[in-house]
Structure formats: C-alpha cells, structure tokens
Length: 482
Ligand code: SF4
Image (cartoon, rainbow, N blue to C red; front, side):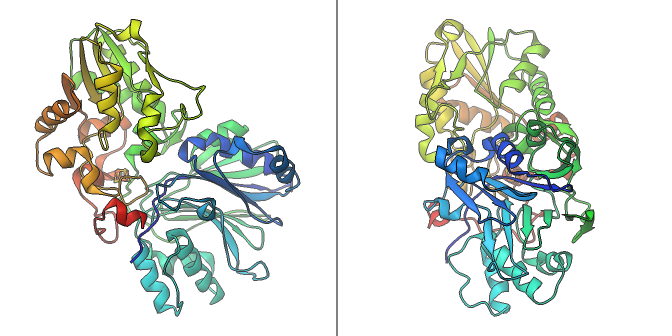
C-alpha cells in the first residue's frame, strides 16, 4: 500500500469584506512564509484557475508576474510546500482543486500537516469511492469532505463526521465555490494557524504564522483554536467547533526550529522562547568556554540567551553564504541536499580557530550536519561543546515534520529507546566528534517555550502518541517515498 506524502508547509487565506483585490497581499504573505516550504507554491483566487509553480515565490518570471497581476479577486488562498517525497513535483503543490468548477460543493484547499492515508482510504471505500489509492492525504481529506458536502452536510457537520478518520495534523485554508474563506485547525493544534485583520483593505487574514501578517501590515487578532472552523464571508466572521479537546499538542519544534523568530504562536513570541531556552541551557550546562557560537540561523536567539546568562561572548563564528543559491536553504528541510547546504556554511576562522567553542544548535535529527560542522568547519577550534535546544529525537514524527523513519534518527540508532540523557549526550558526542554534547530535556523545553508539558506534543522525544487517534505504524523512509 502506498503511504502518505510528508509535508510541513505554510498556508494563507485573505478575504476583503470591501471587495478590494487581495492578490498582492497573498503573494507578499506567502513570501513571508517561505521558510516553511521552498519546493513549490500556489495561489487560488476566486474566479480564476489555480496557479502553481515549483521553487520559491520570488522566482516568478515576467510572464508569470503578468499572469498573476491579471488575477484580481477579493478572496484567495495560498500555500508554500515542502515535501521529501521522491515525486515532489508541482503536481502535488497546493491549493488542490476538489470537485468540478460547475459543482456548487467544489472548493480549493491548502493544507499544513500530515494525515494517515490508510484511515481516509478505509472511510472513502465505505462511502463507495472506488479508487482512493495513489492520491495524497490532502486529496483524500478533500474528496471525503466533498462527498459529505454533496450529501447536504454543512462544513461543520462534514468535519464532525470525518474527524474520526483524521489521524494526524491539519491547519487548513479553504476557498469555497461560493467565495467563502474557511480556516480549520485540528483538534489538538499540532500546527499553528492564526487570524489577523488588514485595515487598509478591510480584510481578514488566516496564516500559518503571524510573521505573514506583519509582512503585509495586518494585525494579529488571535490563534485559530484547536478544533475550530472559522468561516469568513460577506456577512462577516463565524466561529464554530467540530471538536473540543482539553489536551492540546502544540508542536515545540515550531518554537525551536521551524517557525520564524518574529512569529507569535499561542501568545508566545518564538524569538523569546528560543532565547529563554538558551538561558536554561546555561543553567543546565555551565561549560567553560571562550565563545558561544550559533549554528545559523534558528539557534541564534538561544546562543544569545546562553551568552547573556554566562557572560561568555557571543560570536557569529559560522555564517551561511547567502549569495549562493543553496545558501539560504535549511538543511533539515531537504535531506537529499543536506551536505551541499552544510558546505555553504562558512566558518570565520579568526573567530573560532584555537577557541573553546560552545556551539548551540536547535536539534540533531540524523547527525549528518552536526558531524560536518564539528569535524570540518570547526576542526581548528581548541574544543567544541555542542548544546541542543530540543531534547533527543528518538521516535518518528507523523504530525507534519519530516522525520518519518525511526531508523534514521541518530539518538535512536546509537542509543535505542531507554538510554538516560547523560548516556545519549556521551554517545552522540563520540559519534559527531565533539568534546561534549548536552541536550535540553522536556522540563527545560517546557519552561523555555512557556507551555505546560501537557499542552505540547512530545511524541518524537517521549514516544507518547496518545494525542493521535491511533498510534501510527512506524515506516521506513523508502516506504514513505514509494
Ligand atoms: S512528534 Fe515532535 S516534531 Fe512531530 S509534532 Fe510532535 S513534537 Fe512536533
């Protein structure tokens, strides 16, 4: 059986109550979400065909620019995509068109997250859909919703009915055939989604992160709540719930790595969370060193926090070469290109050679990048102590971050599932060639981010998948790519 595509992406939707053209705002918002996906992007404007392209948003050509400029509309959705599937082409880019244009239950949908395909396939077979194989998790969810809408269900009823089959994460923006904008977040709130207001165009804005609101001059109103469906139409805004769970499972990886530092998620500014974690690491691991150096870019605030708390000078000892095409790519996002990306990290020799370097990074997933940075980029340092803002990643993620296979996780590979954190620190240090490795722990993560442990997903570090409807079957990467 084929398996689900792995995605973590960025979504945006804009609705102008006064009928102002929102296409330029959509493009600017998508550019601000580019860090969430660089493989393909797309927009759907009401009254126009869906537009999708590979690569990053700002790479559009003169011809494409002219095409986009003709797509005027007062409501639209957009998506930036990252995926690690072998077949990661523009065909899989969002928004996806569900139903035919003439169909008044049709809609276009953009998804951030990952859903288990097997359950959705089972449900569709029960609904009489004969060929649900070979299509993505988003398309399966879309087709399922469409069939329920065709049977006369409202959107909220359709989500209520489908919810038992939605095992995983989803933050969605939907453009209906009637020109309504809908935002939906799964019942646990794994992935972020927020609501804002753009005064100049009298528009409501839904976006994965508040950095997109900031970029277009909109103000953050609030997060979309887990289990909430927000419908925006000419009549204004309506909030309903298809599910309510007390136990939320916000992904802490958004705070330590994925989200933009300026974004505010669940009322917490990502930059502050990262800096706090740096301070906590300083208390936990008071190492003697000459300089504190971040692995660019997401560890920079944590390194500042560590430096502030210890008084050890902060140095930009590693920099990304931004003038190379691949210099700004994030190494975690594109594993097949990881070594190329790391090779675009340049050490500032005068800053690091001969020094006792305290290196701060957000996480170790497979260990490849850390080994190159410690063993090659910092080979002339006197010593390298590596501190990680995220606890050891031992279990795969099936909620939208791309480490689907346990066998590829370094901490699991060399320590198994029951080693103490001290043992993991020691063995990982040996493996990557560092003088010392110190992982954050779950308490430090919770304190640093500012969310209680029971409001976060910690499945990849604790192996507790109880916030999913069913524990997923662990798969190999090749299986995920098939
Ligand atoms: S398993 Fe890890 S990366 Fe995935 S959602 Fe949970 S905390 Fe985030």
